[in-house]
Image 1 (tube, rainbow, N blue to C red):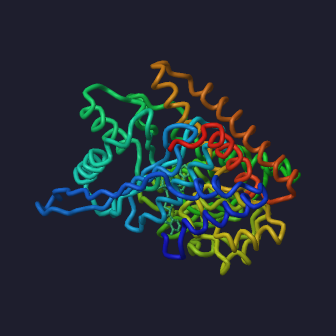
Image 2: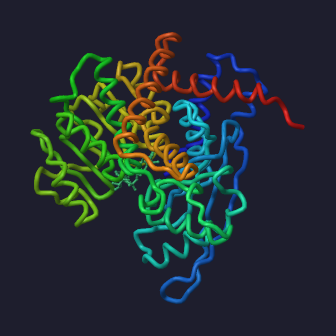
Image 3: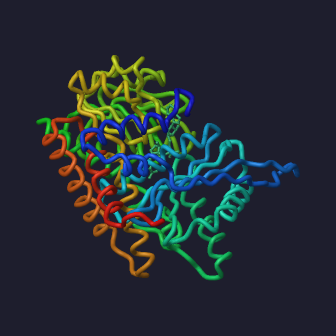
Length: 416
Ligand code: NAD
């Protein structure tokens, strides 16, 4: 994943563009471009064949100025410290854009969960949790799911932490099953936020979601829910790809049928409700809206020229390289950056943490209404900033985020 160059380097480039416009003082600049803590752990696991494997895990707490570190845990063979650090930084800016009382963190374990049994995944999750246990907690650092991690993994995480501290701690992690303190609406929250970002952008650009055509890369938690909710708004999801292939239907794919296919086959490839689509062809489809919702470094300077969409909504974190972003912006493509577009997930994670701490749970309608308010407020703040400084939406989102974190950093002063 980090193979196309440093992901952290890409984050720094984005940061610098905004920091320069803000005329950010050098001291704060240095503080905001260094990760606060980077933890590296070795996690021995006895595999089903009796042998012991040792997995490397990371937890990065990039910034904790506004509150506890917040961010997901990724299980993937391509995880690197560089990538986890960039993702932790993006969480910092995302929480600030969404005005959440959280800093930014991220975790990752180098492993291939598709080749591991349920028992092996449980053992790995428990050992990883135990190895980072001193650094986490409801007031310190609150993990969540990310690529290849889910509610079950969060349940094991929460249980391991609870067994260590001697009481049930639900607020140590978000994205848990609803039965054990999860929030209604959390599973759909990132995709819902992507849909709201698309809807607000389309309104601003002067076209309707109803009848708009959409291409989605990645059909996991984010991509599938975004596709489903956009289809419910009347958009036509014409192309979808994942790690094994893709499908295309100019008249619009039947998204519930595609979800049922994926539940059975673990991939969109082979879906009979459309023709096969090569994974790389998703970016050049003649659509109104393109939603990268897989991994970082997907839209690069080599394929940015193919993009025909007028609107790109970044469901994934870091899907567009800085050079590709520049090329898209120069061509008038409206790009809603990750730290705004996918902030719905962490916003409802925040609602989950609040509900756990109060021991009082909200209805799904209440969660969705609060999410709607948060996303629209964040979108409006970034759009106004973009207009005020005459910059693209990504630079504007960074300006909003850096301003908020820098203001509190100055107020708190230097502890020496
Ligand atoms: P997921 O594991 O549920 O789904 C990932 C999807 O991407 C799968 O369909 C997979 O097949 C596909 N994919 C993987 N490699 C691919 C490739 N090379 N080409 C095409 N497709 C590929 O993960 P997710 O939770 O949906 O996360 C997707 C992205 O959204 C990540 O960048 C993640 O950091 C970001 N994100 C997730 C959340 C969340 O709440 N889950 C919140 C904010 C951001």
